[in-house]
Image (cartoon, rainbow, N blue to C red; front, side, top):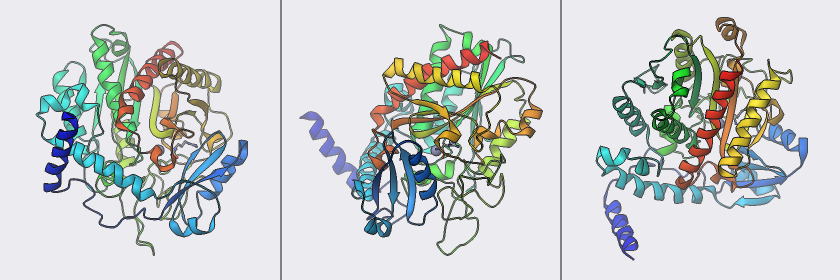
Length: 438
Ligand code: ARG
Ligand code: ZN
């Protein structure tokens, strides 16, 4: 009863305050939108996903399940397609989540820094860009011997700093192998950034008793790539995917480029769109977007020649995807890449019971201009010494079968820690494997 009373009180307090969220956009962009489930099996699911991705009225191909494809469509599209409706009104789902976050953000903002950063508070919910930057900064202050905070590797389209951190011990400083992690390419995939935070937190916590990892490897991390899109997904449009750059004024007033279609790696060679309104818009040129440029510059100019692994974290569908994404040709070391990918899947299963699927990116669907393919691009490979590179795209929780349509991106905050735990254990094993099989 006390909890209930406090809740009611909290709600009344928050009603008198200025709203923190959803202030930029007064419209309700998802009113009347539906999530449709198309029943399909085997290869047909991927054909359907690929075809529908470029159809006007299809907002997003959400997920490919084992016996279905979920598609988020606008109200016009919904009106003439007889399918099974999974979410009757997407806006209602978004509204409920924003109401929850509004209250949570008000109580979070009243905490002292010490309270905010206590793990049980920090990992109990998702956080805004400013709070994430501050969190990494205090982490570097707490662990000056292990964490380097890089306040800016470049600016976003709307002039916000993209931060990076490096995590490493002083042992073998200039000879140890490097692993690259980045996340938050897609704005609405909030569990990506939260999982990387949990991963870093766990690495630091375990270092005291098990220094092997940081003595043998340096972690290079871009914890939130698409900062403008991410902020827009808090204070504008919860289901936003792209960045927020206005490339050219088209009839629809379209904004944004898909940052995982813009890398200079077989850019525009399938699985992306040249139409600015598309959710998989590849941009006007390869590497045109400031966020992609920032990551490339940081990577190429900051002595990352000892790289043996690179992982890009997304959501959702529970997949461990290995290259290539743009061609059926096998990537270098396909056998070892498959082994390491399957091991990630198996570790997760052991830790949490969750089933991830390990497969090639191209077998999910074709995409070009993606980050994980970029690391195999000739320019990058030429520049890296002759070592094996273990590159992956991981799609986090929930699974396509468990996700209730659009809610897949709105993962309950109670899942932040379990997702973090399964990925931390899996990545520890992955790094040990890559170190042992150079
Ligand atoms: N969902 C991610 C995206 O669309 C993963 C892409 C993985 N690559 C692929 N070729 N399927 O960006
Ligand atoms: Zn994504």
